[in-house]
Length: 252
Image 1 (cartoon, rainbow, N blue to C red):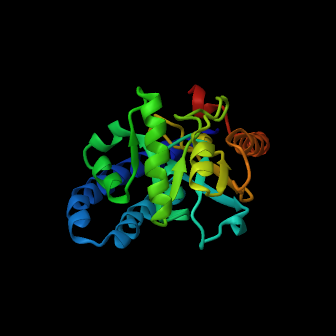
Image 2 (image 1 turned 90 degrees about the horizontal axis):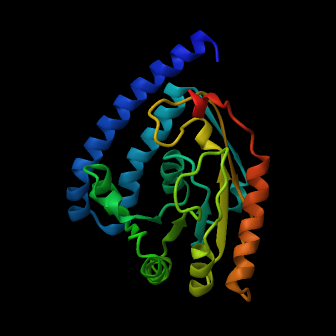
């Protein structure tokens, strides 16, 4: 990355950081009132105004393009167990917009984060204690089934935490267990957003994010292990084919 590009990266990242903080505080402060006054069906669209603003400003200020492959695989008439690899914060905002309404499986500590957590509460997340693995899995299945029956898709990051795009981690079977229990299909998605929006770093990098939406994986007549292997196989193969970003994202 040349000096001019590096300077634009720092400047754009700084402006975006300010916008990110101000917009998160504003929407977070309004979230409790919105939750109290708005019917449930209107809460996700209101929160998504914030999400769409972040996604737009990120593209403009940080010099990022987004390419989608397989959008035709999204059936708006169905609810899914949505699974995606987890590299940054970017995909958590995108998938709220792409698959609304959706409830995300997340660690319960996030709900206690001022402003940010208050906004999350608007969209019925499944907040788990990751230190209690057995209870967490039971909660995902029981609350996940409730969300799906209510017409909401459930978003699960099967890696369990953010993983840099140059790393690999096993996928847990929670998504497949929920899908078989709820008799719901799995919709897998992979992306390489970690090269432009790295986890736990405020600096962002220009580039192109590719998002690949996979074919629907039906759960009917399949064992949990079969469904998990089908999901895992597709995601691993597609992740290996994603374009690689600049190593400066992780090393500087």
